Length: 373
Image (cartoon, rainbow, N blue to C red; front, side, top):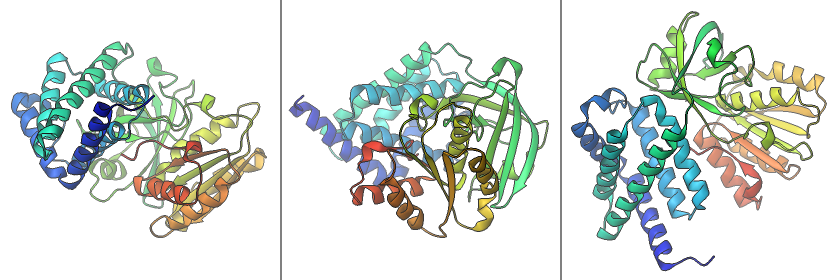
């Protein structure tokens, strides 16, 4: 279908707004919070504006949404993205008034960041669509907004990393997520602060959960988990998120698959490999495990045990002390023998690998990763 002038104008406005938000994130965040919390001070407890991680996540999310507009994403793909955001926000138990106020705050923040009246007009339409779809999709979901689990064990690993094992409450078994997804998570040490953690095990009937949490500089939640998590703690989970694995149905049994993991991005790919191990027929699967130091390869012995008992699977370490360049080179090399490439790790790692694949002529249609935010 030919693109209309109006479509092109909207895409150009979205691209300019995305660049403006990227260049002046503080302006956007301040304007959004001043408008929203000025109208609804009670929401400030659920959305902590003073937390750096929250501000960064908000800006990345907005950039990604504007990027979808700018790149002319198919309407179903954009609606799906906004639907995921709406379902994710169910954990805050937002009402019609909250979405109306958020729509106004979003439009005003974009308008304040924009440089032209044309872009401000687009900001109004974009805010209408974003909040309308989020609210509609949230209202259609009849599952519980949140569910809980109890910590039963912690294991300290190098990195520093802590492996946290939990049991989901009986009414939440098996836990409501697909293998390869990540979960909105709240820990008791940081009430009101939600973070996204990927289970390192596939969903199980007995409710077993496992997370690998690594300290992030300035990360209040990850730091609290490493310092204070103990058996008996209660964790709360919201919506599952992401389409990295799209469940086992998204992994064909007759194609070669390359899994590329960096940092604790290993967790969802580890879960995927464990889920494939109980499937009758599997493709040839190669996993590249990127790490800054040898100590961070603490899970490699278990992955090699999995490889010994499953001839279709192989795990290879890639030491990469800086910039993820070594992992990107290995990804390009192995992609030539793979029909599907799944990337999981920090945004810097994923974007470095995608750039390397693109510059080497690898079709990005066979590359899958969750958004870089």
